[in-house]
Length: 473
Image 1 (tube, rainbow, N blue to C red):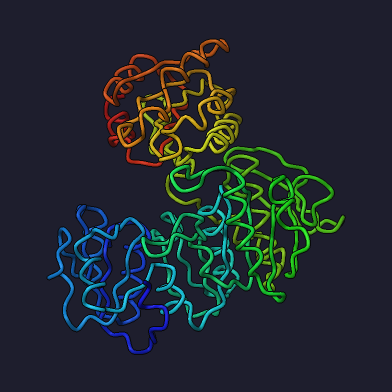
Image 2: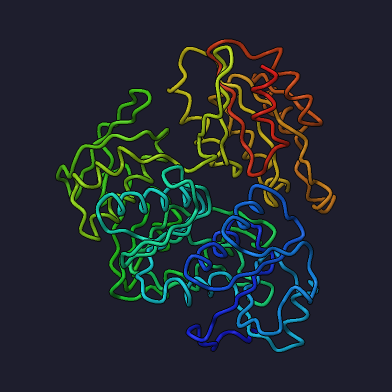
């Protein structure tokens, strides 16, 4: 069905992207425009800031999906993974025999053709780790390109076209397109790959943990003997998957069994200080504006990648010291009357637990008020119902919103925010259930006090709760 599999990218001049306003597709459209291609796109959700960003780049955007949006002389159509076979433009390109491809195929053919991919994979930490690698390589003089899943605050962008020989890519395990249900990361042949961890997630496409592990096993099996894999030793599923691989394998973690190890970790807000030990010898001392052990492990992976590509410990240290994490990763949105409002992308129970645990030492004078919105296809299912009850141990107060899109989930599989609150209350936790965002804001205005941290966790916009809460405070 994929009519673009053998298409020659050197013949491409005009490109159309279906569902162009997604974070990844929008970045790809801008990259292609910067490379000199004539780019158009369409989407049913055309609104700022992405619509303005694309328009400023000179990308013509059509509202809605109509076959007329695709010019007859279009050379290639890139189909986003949110696009179904029933989409009018998707039907048109199939019926008209127009060459089309998925987003990772387009990246491979048109962006990475003359570059060595550096791929970051894993259930957690992909955006932070890939952004960090890109910045450290840039500061080390390697001038990389990158394509990641969040906005890097160092660049105010989620993509960059560099003149160097490396392309840093965030490798997603989610499916590729309606005509290719395999994970996106299977399309890349990286020189260096990072594997941060493997857990069950994306319950809408994976049936269980074994299914997820099969996907990562396929990825690892296709790594070439000359490639290097940097893998997290602390993750049991990773240790299982990396056995007897043909590529070169280096591990990182907290124990002496790892090739790269964290040591002497200290928290001196706003800094985290740590040593790196490689093969039982001190490699270097580092400091970073990173919160939590999980982020220091991400930094350790980035340091190992830099070393593999020839950066010295001092070069990596200088890059890490000036690294600013991606937006929505422990991002302080503002402070009012001594109350800090923080935004974080955490939604998987492990990510929620580690984020809550990570920020606690940085705000010792007040309470930690955790605000959680279950929004992903996995978090709105009951697969993690019991795990979430173990994710808020370090919080003083927990606010849980009713899932805003729960009707998308079959009735017998739905997550219950009320049950989570009841389970937390049974543990002695001050937990509260809310039907909507307005009720959460009203509660926080009355409850929050000076020195408190309000940690808001969601993978969505959460009804602009951050700005609205700051205004109300």
